[in-house]
Image 1 (cartoon, rainbow, N blue to C red):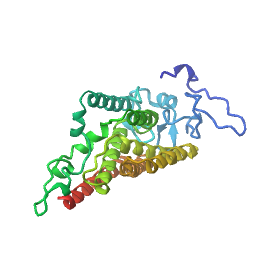
Image 2 (cartoon, rainbow, N blue to C red):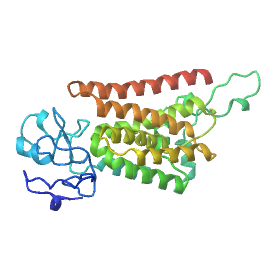
Image 3 (cartoon, rainbow, N blue to C red):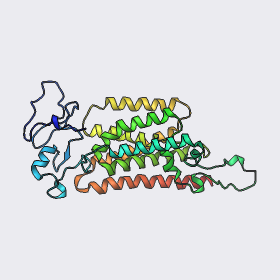
Image 4 (cartoon, one colour):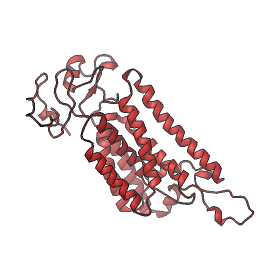
Length: 309
């Protein structure tokens, strides 16, 4: 949304807030923030803050210093995690929602498609094989169908399931994409989903099928908590929302809690590296941590496959 009408002229500061009040972003008056531009001291929210060698700068000061599109890459506007500031900070979020909805519609049209997308460790179950015969699954991850770890992240069968996941993706994805940048946000989403699938494969019964973006969504929950703490915002709303979701996870039957926990752990680990990485080694720490989580996923899958087959 264009907020240009709310922007004060470059160099002009807002009046300081009254005693005991939390300042709001000078470009987004509806957002409270505890971060200020280190050049002009204006309060800025995550969507507006540009990482600098010391603290954060507002877009106006960045433009005044180097001009849009000019100057070396180190002086161009960057997000808190070092990503590029874009005109549409929700583009990847919208694309992910579109993919999920498209797959859901395809499943409603042809429900047999679900058998080729759902995450399952092995099929048929071992107890269906006559005693004395070797067990060789013909379907599932143990049979080499690793792609199920990806396809299951975008497959939903129940309406309530996709509605909950897509609303969560919209609410959490937009701010995270704006704060991390597109590439980091997409990596966080996909690797969190893989981590959730890997833990499900490890702990659930091999023939138990699971599906949905919940592992990736819980990765976004964990990343949001990390980002809120990094920005020194009030964490109570985020913690309360996460606790409520975890209560539902363990109190309702039929939910793959393993995917939720796996995605949450992976999301927290990657997000912590993304927002706390030292500036001089930012890329190495960020992408290195994502690679470590991905390697852990592969190790879990290989080890579990060995025990099944």
